[in-house]
Image (cartoon, rainbow, N blue to C red; front, side):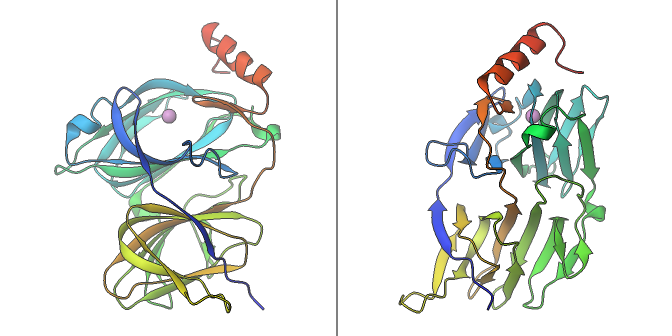
Length: 288
Ligand code: CO
């Protein structure tokens, strides 16, 4: 019999300042939740006030990780040490594998007064920490969108639903990254690979995750925006909305179970490797 993944923890994001002064909501890489293997960080940025983000993220390095940006609104101007540059538009995705080292700039800009998006950091295994940097940019029109059986509208950024493959592929963590939009009276059921870490980030409305426990009175967990929900192990999750629109990201990936040493934008396995990264940066040998 298939096993339901229950909600095991609900996390409130905390406000932090990042980059050159960007105010954002952080749910992973906090005191409460340092690491959700293989996910190192999860940020939700955006505001009606450009002062909250206009300073952006000027040139900074990364090593040993992947950064994933999904933009809901506004634009992000970017350029990097591989020679990529451009403007990320609404509903676009940038999946950047820093590997041995990349230096880049990410500058959020309003469009029609709006700006909102997410950044996720995915860890790389020891064998790929120093891999060649790699970059996938996916435009809105390249992200498949399907209607689920329960009536939800789902954008498949990574992973697969009923044979429809997501826009981003060939990622080590074997990730699933879905944008799930459930209208009132609709539901959504989704298999998630057993053993993979899984969480949902609720950013609009309110709904429920089924929590079938014969010993419990509660058959569901009610959640509202803005929260991060961690699921226990199992085969699938089920979400439903009774009254309002319920929109969340559903993200899963294969845990690495490796030691981590992190220092800002560098995430390696040992402190020696972190020191090497700092040395390489000082000696202008960071970008291989
Ligand atoms: Co960055």
